[in-house]
Amino acid sequence: MAEVEKNTLAQLDQLNVLVIDDNLLVHSILKESLFALGIKEVRCVQNAYYGIRLCDEMHFHIVICAFNVKSDKDGFHLLEELKFRGHVKKTTVLIFLSTETNESLVNSIIELQPDDFWTKPLAINKVRTRFIAILKVKQVLFNINSAIDKKAYAKAIYFADRHLQNEKLAHFHPNINRIKGESYLALRDFEEAEKFYSQLFKQYKYSWVYLGYAKALLKQGRLDEISDMLKTLIDKRDTRFGAHDMMAQYFIEQEEYEQAYEEIKKAMALAPRNIERNKKSWDLARLTHDHKGQYVATRNIAQQAKNSIHDSPELILNVIRSGIDLACATPDESANEILQQTDRYIRQFELDRHDATLFKQQLIVVKARLHNVRNERDKATKLVENHMSLQPSTVVEDNLDRVKVLHELGMREDAIELLEAINNQIAGDSLNSQVVRRYIAQETEQREEIHFTAKELNSMAVEHFQKNRLLPALDAIKQALKLSPSNVKLLFSQLKILIKIKQEEQDIPDHLVSAEGIIAMLTSKNLEGKSLVTFDDLLIKWQKVISES
Image 1 (cartoon, rainbow, N blue to C red):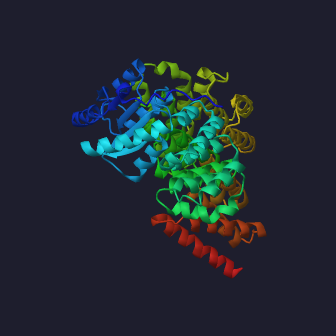
Image 2 (image 1 turned 45 degrees about the horizontal axis):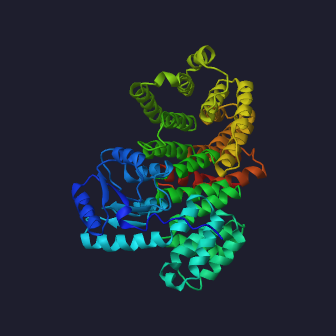
Image 3 (image 1 turned 90 degrees about the vertical axis):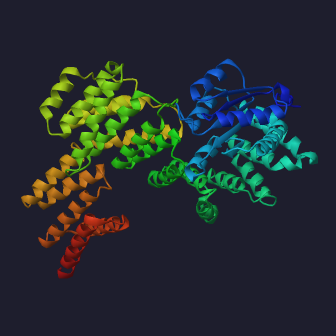
């Protein structure tokens, strides 16, 4: 028989409560309410810094935290850090306070799995009633939650089954069943999880039952069987975030990265604060050559991670790098604005960081890349040859940036050798490792095959086109589109070249297929403004040359 632990939530007068809120009135209301219930130890702080210090000094059974702790980090990042440090566990009573109830905030809070979410202003009577109800649930589920804290999921299922046999606990059976289902999924026993959730449909219509059942089937690769259910889940406000997130994971596992990226973007819009999901969005953007998406993702990561456990100088470096990547993939003058913003990031990085000298090598690489994208190749070459080390760094992103500058300067053998070293650095079988490995393989293949940036290739295509070398122009633009497949201006250029080839009667059947594919892709983008005018004009010209042939 599994050992039953002492329930540390059983005695009110032995409980330690921590309140983190910058509003002193909230402190007063909560203290009055909790003291009246017989709780003796209630500590109140106004910011995250002192909250963390208190948790380092003593154990709290109950944490009540405001989302908007203005003085330093917000409640989301604070609770994330408290969980990371082990101060908040499944056995901890966790209550979130907020004056806001917008969807993105609620989704972000749900991810942290608090026991309750109280909207301010608080009323003493409601605080007492809600608190007693929450504490009772946590007391009943203590042994199950303790097993979850230890990742002893089979033990959690054992305790859940015992509680489910007790009719006196019928009121708590939904909570118990939810933990039991999550334990099956954590054990990767997906067939048993499927049976369990299908039985629950007879009792409950809760959102978590449908999401759990869908996840169990998706993990078995049975998407077709639940396609209608997934559409329903995506349409419902309380399940659409979970459904998009789950679908993104599914498509990554199936190596269907473009579909995974579309799903992760939808999940990000609904819950933008999760850093790991932002990183996944960044990796998928790189894999699908969405350079603007990379730039947006790295900026989101740097912004959301500020003052959190994820914060680091490398995050700003990644914004700088993705800005240069975007400029390299942007064939027109709009690249200049991106480069100017990148210059500002570099200056700010060097001014703000007292340890900027530790990142000397990384800054040399980005500055060389900036020279190169501005057609200052001699300056870039001098920086690389005189100051850049070719020894692989321990950081994958540093090495990737070196590969790019080496490739851009024509030092391709060094670039390929460094890519091989990077591939050996990526360890583990996580989904993140899987995506990064695929990206490195893709980079290796393209660096061997394509010797220029998308911007350089577009310039070559323009020069060939102006001299009526249409087939070389087409080859150059096709290579550019391999590096930046969704770039509208490059797609316009290819269609323009194909129209000219058709007019000159140099076309082959493959050209017709290519043109129709480009038209379909541009149509799906719902273009507006000047882009739509340009597309309409090209479409009329294409239809004219087709009718005349």
